Length: 387
Image 1 (cartoon, rainbow, N blue to C red):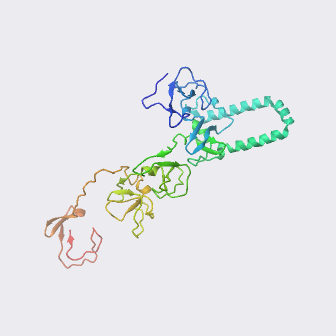
Image 2 (cartoon, rainbow, N blue to C red):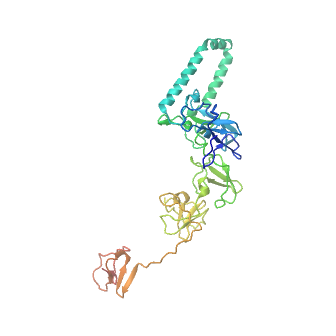
Protein backbone atom coordinates (compact mmCIF):
# COMPACT_ATOMS: atom_id res chain seq x y z
CA UNK A 1 0.00 0.00 0.00
CA UNK A 2 1.31 3.39 -0.96
CA UNK A 3 1.29 6.17 1.58
CA UNK A 4 -0.20 9.61 1.19
CA UNK A 5 1.72 12.79 0.55
CA UNK A 6 2.38 15.51 3.08
CA UNK A 7 -0.71 17.44 2.12
CA UNK A 8 -2.91 14.88 3.88
CA UNK A 9 -5.06 12.04 2.69
CA UNK A 10 -8.30 12.81 0.87
CA UNK A 11 -11.50 11.76 2.59
CA UNK A 12 -14.11 9.28 1.44
CA UNK A 13 -17.07 11.25 0.16
CA UNK A 14 -19.38 8.32 0.91
CA UNK A 15 -18.74 8.70 4.63
CA UNK A 16 -20.47 11.05 7.08
CA UNK A 17 -19.21 14.60 6.50
CA UNK A 18 -18.96 15.17 10.25
CA UNK A 19 -16.77 12.05 10.70
CA UNK A 20 -15.11 11.49 7.33
CA UNK A 21 -13.04 8.40 6.57
CA UNK A 22 -9.57 8.75 5.09
CA UNK A 23 -8.74 7.28 1.69
CA UNK A 24 -5.53 5.35 1.10
CA UNK A 25 -3.59 5.09 -2.16
CA UNK A 26 -3.27 1.44 -3.17
CA UNK A 27 -1.63 -0.42 -6.04
CA UNK A 28 -1.90 -4.06 -4.96
CA UNK A 29 -4.22 -5.91 -5.22
CA UNK A 30 -5.42 -4.28 -8.47
CA UNK A 31 -8.63 -2.27 -8.47
CA UNK A 32 -11.71 -4.45 -9.02
CA UNK A 33 -14.45 -1.98 -9.97
CA UNK A 34 -14.60 1.78 -9.33
CA UNK A 35 -17.65 2.46 -7.15
CA UNK A 36 -18.31 5.78 -8.93
CA UNK A 37 -17.96 5.15 -12.66
CA UNK A 38 -18.20 1.31 -12.50
CA UNK A 39 -15.10 1.14 -14.69
CA UNK A 40 -12.20 -1.30 -14.59
CA UNK A 41 -8.54 -0.39 -13.97
CA UNK A 42 -7.20 2.14 -16.46
CA UNK A 43 -5.03 0.96 -19.30
CA UNK A 44 -1.76 2.80 -18.88
CA UNK A 45 -2.62 4.56 -15.63
CA UNK A 46 0.49 6.71 -15.39
CA UNK A 47 0.43 7.02 -11.62
CA UNK A 48 -0.40 3.38 -11.07
CA UNK A 49 -2.55 3.70 -7.92
CA UNK A 50 -6.21 3.94 -6.96
CA UNK A 51 -7.99 5.03 -3.78
CA UNK A 52 -9.42 2.65 -1.22
CA UNK A 53 -11.63 3.28 1.82
CA UNK A 54 -10.98 0.52 4.34
CA UNK A 55 -14.02 1.48 6.45
CA UNK A 56 -16.55 1.54 3.61
CA UNK A 57 -14.77 -1.19 1.64
CA UNK A 58 -14.99 0.71 -1.66
CA UNK A 59 -12.49 1.53 -4.41
CA UNK A 60 -12.16 4.64 -6.58
CA UNK A 61 -10.16 5.59 -9.62
CA UNK A 62 -7.87 8.54 -8.98
CA UNK A 63 -10.28 11.39 -9.77
CA UNK A 64 -13.47 9.38 -9.36
CA UNK A 65 -12.93 9.62 -5.60
CA UNK A 66 -14.17 13.21 -5.91
CA UNK A 67 -17.51 12.04 -7.32
CA UNK A 68 -19.16 9.29 -5.23
CA UNK A 69 -22.19 7.48 -6.66
CA UNK A 70 -24.50 8.99 -4.02
CA UNK A 71 -24.21 12.03 -1.76
CA UNK A 72 -26.06 14.09 0.83
CA UNK A 73 -25.82 17.79 -0.01
CA UNK A 74 -26.62 20.80 2.21
CA UNK A 75 -28.92 22.20 -0.47
CA UNK A 76 -31.05 19.04 -0.47
CA UNK A 77 -30.80 17.24 2.86
CA UNK A 78 -34.04 15.24 2.79
CA UNK A 79 -33.01 13.02 -0.16
CA UNK A 80 -29.75 11.65 -1.52
CA UNK A 81 -28.43 12.82 -4.88
CA UNK A 82 -27.33 10.18 -7.38
CA UNK A 83 -24.44 10.50 -9.81
CA UNK A 84 -26.02 10.55 -13.28
CA UNK A 85 -24.52 10.52 -16.78
CA UNK A 86 -25.76 13.12 -19.25
CA UNK A 87 -25.95 10.33 -21.82
CA UNK A 88 -27.97 7.63 -20.08
CA UNK A 89 -26.97 4.96 -22.63
CA UNK A 90 -23.27 5.35 -21.90
CA UNK A 91 -21.42 2.64 -20.02
CA UNK A 92 -18.68 4.59 -18.27
CA UNK A 93 -16.34 1.60 -18.35
CA UNK A 94 -16.02 2.35 -22.09
CA UNK A 95 -13.90 5.34 -21.09
CA UNK A 96 -10.74 3.66 -19.79
CA UNK A 97 -8.53 6.74 -19.61
CA UNK A 98 -11.01 9.50 -18.86
CA UNK A 99 -8.76 11.14 -16.27
CA UNK A 100 -5.79 11.31 -18.61
CA UNK A 101 -6.92 13.64 -21.40
CA UNK A 102 -9.68 11.82 -23.27
CA UNK A 103 -10.36 13.87 -26.40
CA UNK A 104 -13.83 14.82 -27.58
CA UNK A 105 -13.45 12.53 -30.61
CA UNK A 106 -12.46 9.58 -28.39
CA UNK A 107 -15.41 10.25 -26.11
CA UNK A 108 -17.87 10.48 -29.00
CA UNK A 109 -16.46 7.25 -30.50
CA UNK A 110 -16.98 5.50 -27.16
CA UNK A 111 -20.58 6.76 -26.96
CA UNK A 112 -21.36 5.58 -30.51
CA UNK A 113 -19.71 2.22 -29.85
CA UNK A 114 -21.70 1.76 -26.67
CA UNK A 115 -25.01 2.72 -28.31
CA UNK A 116 -24.34 0.34 -31.22
CA UNK A 117 -23.66 -2.39 -28.68
CA UNK A 118 -27.03 -1.75 -27.04
CA UNK A 119 -28.77 -1.70 -30.43
CA UNK A 120 -27.33 -5.06 -31.51
CA UNK A 121 -28.30 -6.63 -28.19
CA UNK A 122 -31.85 -5.29 -28.46
CA UNK A 123 -32.28 -6.49 -32.06
CA UNK A 124 -31.10 -10.05 -31.25
CA UNK A 125 -33.89 -10.48 -28.74
CA UNK A 126 -36.44 -8.52 -30.71
CA UNK A 127 -38.73 -11.44 -31.66
CA UNK A 128 -39.15 -12.56 -28.06
CA UNK A 129 -39.82 -9.01 -26.94
CA UNK A 130 -42.38 -8.50 -29.70
CA UNK A 131 -44.29 -11.63 -28.76
CA UNK A 132 -44.23 -10.69 -25.11
CA UNK A 133 -45.57 -7.23 -25.87
CA UNK A 134 -48.40 -8.70 -27.97
CA UNK A 135 -49.62 -10.60 -24.92
CA UNK A 136 -50.17 -7.44 -22.90
CA UNK A 137 -50.30 -4.31 -25.05
CA UNK A 138 -52.01 -2.12 -22.48
CA UNK A 139 -49.52 -2.88 -19.71
CA UNK A 140 -46.62 -2.24 -22.08
CA UNK A 141 -48.11 1.11 -23.09
CA UNK A 142 -48.40 2.25 -19.48
CA UNK A 143 -44.81 1.22 -18.75
CA UNK A 144 -43.53 3.04 -21.84
CA UNK A 145 -45.38 6.17 -20.82
CA UNK A 146 -44.01 6.08 -17.29
CA UNK A 147 -40.51 5.41 -18.58
CA UNK A 148 -40.76 8.34 -20.96
CA UNK A 149 -41.75 10.69 -18.14
CA UNK A 150 -38.87 9.47 -15.99
CA UNK A 151 -36.34 9.91 -18.80
CA UNK A 152 -37.63 13.42 -19.44
CA UNK A 153 -37.40 14.28 -15.74
CA UNK A 154 -33.80 13.12 -15.47
CA UNK A 155 -32.56 14.44 -18.81
CA UNK A 156 -29.63 16.70 -17.99
CA UNK A 157 -30.12 18.74 -21.17
CA UNK A 158 -33.32 20.24 -19.74
CA UNK A 159 -32.06 21.07 -16.27
CA UNK A 160 -30.41 23.85 -14.35
CA UNK A 161 -27.99 23.44 -11.48
CA UNK A 162 -29.62 24.62 -8.25
CA UNK A 163 -26.29 25.97 -7.02
CA UNK A 164 -24.86 28.04 -9.90
CA UNK A 165 -28.14 28.15 -11.89
CA UNK A 166 -26.40 27.38 -15.14
CA UNK A 167 -27.77 24.79 -17.55
CA UNK A 168 -26.62 21.20 -17.14
CA UNK A 169 -25.60 20.38 -20.69
CA UNK A 170 -22.82 18.63 -22.55
CA UNK A 171 -20.36 21.15 -23.99
CA UNK A 172 -19.17 19.86 -27.35
CA UNK A 173 -16.76 22.77 -27.83
CA UNK A 174 -14.21 21.65 -25.25
CA UNK A 175 -11.05 19.90 -26.41
CA UNK A 176 -10.76 17.32 -23.63
CA UNK A 177 -13.46 15.60 -21.59
CA UNK A 178 -13.41 15.43 -17.80
CA UNK A 179 -15.61 13.19 -15.71
CA UNK A 180 -17.44 16.28 -14.43
CA UNK A 181 -18.26 17.30 -18.04
CA UNK A 182 -20.45 14.25 -18.64
CA UNK A 183 -22.06 13.76 -15.20
CA UNK A 184 -24.29 15.57 -12.72
CA UNK A 185 -26.07 14.77 -9.45
CA UNK A 186 -29.81 14.32 -9.44
CA UNK A 187 -32.78 13.61 -7.16
CA UNK A 188 -35.50 12.03 -9.30
CA UNK A 189 -38.10 12.47 -6.53
CA UNK A 190 -37.77 16.27 -6.45
CA UNK A 191 -36.29 16.82 -9.91
CA UNK A 192 -33.35 18.52 -8.18
CA UNK A 193 -29.95 18.67 -9.91
CA UNK A 194 -26.42 19.94 -9.26
CA UNK A 195 -23.34 20.12 -11.45
CA UNK A 196 -20.68 17.59 -10.50
CA UNK A 197 -18.19 20.42 -10.02
CA UNK A 198 -20.61 22.37 -7.81
CA UNK A 199 -20.72 19.55 -5.25
CA UNK A 200 -16.92 19.60 -4.82
CA UNK A 201 -17.04 22.91 -2.94
CA UNK A 202 -20.15 22.35 -0.87
CA UNK A 203 -20.78 25.25 1.54
CA UNK A 204 -20.55 24.45 5.28
CA UNK A 205 -23.81 24.12 7.18
CA UNK A 206 -22.75 26.73 9.74
CA UNK A 207 -20.17 29.52 9.90
CA UNK A 208 -18.95 31.28 13.03
CA UNK A 209 -17.27 34.65 12.59
CA UNK A 210 -17.69 36.91 15.61
CA UNK A 211 -16.28 39.90 13.73
CA UNK A 212 -19.18 39.63 11.32
CA UNK A 213 -22.02 38.53 13.64
CA UNK A 214 -22.34 37.55 17.28
CA UNK A 215 -24.20 34.28 16.54
CA UNK A 216 -23.39 31.31 14.33
CA UNK A 217 -24.79 31.69 10.83
CA UNK A 218 -26.67 28.81 9.20
CA UNK A 219 -26.77 27.95 5.50
CA UNK A 220 -30.03 29.10 3.90
CA UNK A 221 -30.35 26.88 0.82
CA UNK A 222 -32.86 29.04 -1.06
CA UNK A 223 -32.05 32.18 -3.02
CA UNK A 224 -34.32 35.14 -2.22
CA UNK A 225 -34.76 38.49 -4.01
CA UNK A 226 -34.06 40.34 -0.75
CA UNK A 227 -31.15 42.65 0.14
CA UNK A 228 -28.08 41.30 1.91
CA UNK A 229 -27.77 42.95 5.32
CA UNK A 230 -24.00 43.32 4.88
CA UNK A 231 -23.83 44.86 1.41
CA UNK A 232 -27.39 45.83 0.41
CA UNK A 233 -27.27 43.89 -2.87
CA UNK A 234 -29.73 41.12 -3.69
CA UNK A 235 -29.35 37.70 -2.06
CA UNK A 236 -30.53 36.23 -5.35
CA UNK A 237 -26.92 35.92 -6.55
CA UNK A 238 -25.86 33.07 -8.81
CA UNK A 239 -22.39 32.54 -7.51
CA UNK A 240 -22.75 32.85 -3.73
CA UNK A 241 -24.49 31.01 -0.90
CA UNK A 242 -26.78 32.66 1.63
CA UNK A 243 -26.43 32.41 5.42
CA UNK A 244 -28.89 33.53 8.05
CA UNK A 245 -29.36 34.15 11.76
CA UNK A 246 -33.06 33.65 12.34
CA UNK A 247 -32.72 34.94 15.90
CA UNK A 248 -31.64 38.36 14.59
CA UNK A 249 -33.50 38.28 11.27
CA UNK A 250 -30.10 38.67 9.61
CA UNK A 251 -29.23 37.36 6.12
CA UNK A 252 -25.96 37.71 4.23
CA UNK A 253 -23.97 36.44 1.29
CA UNK A 254 -21.28 33.97 2.27
CA UNK A 255 -18.57 36.28 0.92
CA UNK A 256 -19.93 39.22 2.90
CA UNK A 257 -19.34 37.32 6.16
CA UNK A 258 -15.62 37.89 5.61
CA UNK A 259 -15.68 41.58 4.67
CA UNK A 260 -12.68 43.47 6.11
CA UNK A 261 -13.21 45.80 9.06
CA UNK A 262 -10.84 48.69 8.22
CA UNK A 263 -9.48 49.51 4.77
CA UNK A 264 -7.79 52.25 2.76
CA UNK A 265 -8.94 52.85 -0.80
CA UNK A 266 -7.52 54.98 -3.59
CA UNK A 267 -10.60 57.24 -3.74
CA UNK A 268 -10.29 58.81 -0.26
CA UNK A 269 -7.46 60.19 1.83
CA UNK A 270 -8.60 58.63 5.14
CA UNK A 271 -9.19 55.07 6.29
CA UNK A 272 -12.69 53.61 6.03
CA UNK A 273 -14.38 51.38 8.61
CA UNK A 274 -17.13 48.87 7.95
CA UNK A 275 -20.42 49.65 9.68
CA UNK A 276 -23.66 47.68 9.55
CA UNK A 277 -25.69 50.89 9.20
CA UNK A 278 -25.31 54.67 9.38
CA UNK A 279 -27.32 57.18 11.37
CA UNK A 280 -29.42 59.13 8.85
CA UNK A 281 -28.09 62.69 8.51
CA UNK A 282 -30.90 64.09 6.41
CA UNK A 283 -28.66 64.37 3.35
CA UNK A 284 -28.48 61.62 0.76
CA UNK A 285 -25.13 59.87 0.45
CA UNK A 286 -23.71 58.84 -2.89
CA UNK A 287 -21.12 56.04 -3.10
CA UNK A 288 -17.58 57.36 -3.40
CA UNK A 289 -16.82 54.80 -6.13
CA UNK A 290 -19.92 54.19 -8.26
CA UNK A 291 -21.73 57.47 -7.33
CA UNK A 292 -25.03 55.66 -6.82
CA UNK A 293 -27.18 56.17 -3.73
CA UNK A 294 -25.99 54.50 -0.49
CA UNK A 295 -28.78 52.97 1.62
CA UNK A 296 -27.82 53.73 5.24
CA UNK A 297 -29.89 50.77 6.48
CA UNK A 298 -27.36 48.25 5.16
CA UNK A 299 -23.65 47.69 5.59
CA UNK A 300 -21.11 50.02 3.98
CA UNK A 301 -17.73 51.63 4.60
CA UNK A 302 -17.55 55.17 6.00
CA UNK A 303 -14.73 57.61 6.78
CA UNK A 304 -12.92 57.22 10.12
CA UNK A 305 -12.22 60.97 10.34
CA UNK A 306 -15.83 62.06 10.19
CA UNK A 307 -15.97 63.07 6.52
CA UNK A 308 -19.42 62.91 4.94
CA UNK A 309 -18.20 59.98 2.83
CA UNK A 310 -19.42 56.41 2.36
CA UNK A 311 -18.87 53.56 -0.12
CA UNK A 312 -20.89 50.44 -0.89
CA UNK A 313 -19.31 47.30 0.60
CA UNK A 314 -18.94 45.70 -2.83
CA UNK A 315 -17.51 48.87 -4.40
CA UNK A 316 -14.99 49.45 -1.60
CA UNK A 317 -13.53 45.95 -1.93
CA UNK A 318 -12.99 45.97 -5.69
CA UNK A 319 -9.45 45.17 -6.77
CA UNK A 320 -9.05 48.45 -8.63
CA UNK A 321 -9.58 50.60 -5.51
CA UNK A 322 -8.48 48.37 -2.58
CA UNK A 323 -5.15 46.59 -2.04
CA UNK A 324 -6.77 43.64 -0.25
CA UNK A 325 -5.37 44.48 3.21
CA UNK A 326 -7.52 44.57 6.35
CA UNK A 327 -5.99 47.30 8.52
CA UNK A 328 -7.89 46.48 11.70
CA UNK A 329 -5.41 46.67 14.59
CA UNK A 330 -2.70 48.18 12.36
CA UNK A 331 -1.50 51.55 13.76
CA UNK A 332 -2.19 54.45 11.45
CA UNK A 333 0.78 56.52 10.35
CA UNK A 334 0.81 60.08 11.64
CA UNK A 335 -0.12 62.51 8.92
CA UNK A 336 2.54 65.13 8.27
CA UNK A 337 1.07 68.60 8.08
CA UNK A 338 2.84 70.09 5.07
CA UNK A 339 2.53 73.79 4.30
CA UNK A 340 1.88 74.65 0.64
CA UNK A 341 4.88 77.00 0.55
CA UNK A 342 8.12 77.86 2.33
CA UNK A 343 8.69 81.54 3.19
CA UNK A 344 12.11 82.69 1.99
CA UNK A 345 11.79 86.29 3.21
CA UNK A 346 9.06 88.85 3.75
CA UNK A 347 8.29 89.18 0.05
CA UNK A 348 9.44 85.80 -1.34
CA UNK A 349 8.05 82.26 -1.11
CA UNK A 350 8.83 78.84 -2.56
CA UNK A 351 5.50 77.23 -3.61
CA UNK A 352 5.23 73.44 -4.01
CA UNK A 353 3.55 73.81 -7.42
CA UNK A 354 6.40 75.98 -8.79
CA UNK A 355 9.52 74.73 -7.09
CA UNK A 356 11.98 75.69 -9.87
CA UNK A 357 11.62 79.47 -9.18
CA UNK A 358 10.80 81.65 -6.19
CA UNK A 359 7.61 83.70 -6.20
CA UNK A 360 7.70 87.36 -5.19
CA UNK A 361 4.75 89.33 -3.91
CA UNK A 362 3.57 91.99 -6.35
CA UNK A 363 2.31 95.31 -4.95
CA UNK A 364 1.56 97.12 -8.19
CA UNK A 365 -1.78 98.31 -9.55
CA UNK A 366 -1.26 96.75 -12.97
CA UNK A 367 -3.93 95.19 -15.13
CA UNK A 368 -4.65 91.64 -13.87
CA UNK A 369 -7.95 91.07 -15.68
CA UNK A 370 -6.58 88.17 -17.75
CA UNK A 371 -4.55 86.51 -15.01
CA UNK A 372 -5.70 83.52 -12.94
CA UNK A 373 -4.11 81.74 -10.01
CA UNK A 374 -2.61 78.46 -11.21
CA UNK A 375 -3.30 76.81 -7.83
CA UNK A 376 -6.97 77.67 -7.21
CA UNK A 377 -7.94 78.96 -10.71
CA UNK A 378 -9.45 82.16 -9.23
CA UNK A 379 -8.74 85.62 -10.76
CA UNK A 380 -5.55 87.39 -9.65
CA UNK A 381 -5.96 90.49 -7.44
CA UNK A 382 -3.46 93.02 -6.16
CA UNK A 383 -0.77 91.94 -3.70
CA UNK A 384 -0.52 88.39 -5.09
CA UNK A 385 2.71 86.51 -5.75
CA UNK A 386 4.22 86.24 -9.24
CA UNK A 387 7.16 84.59 -10.86
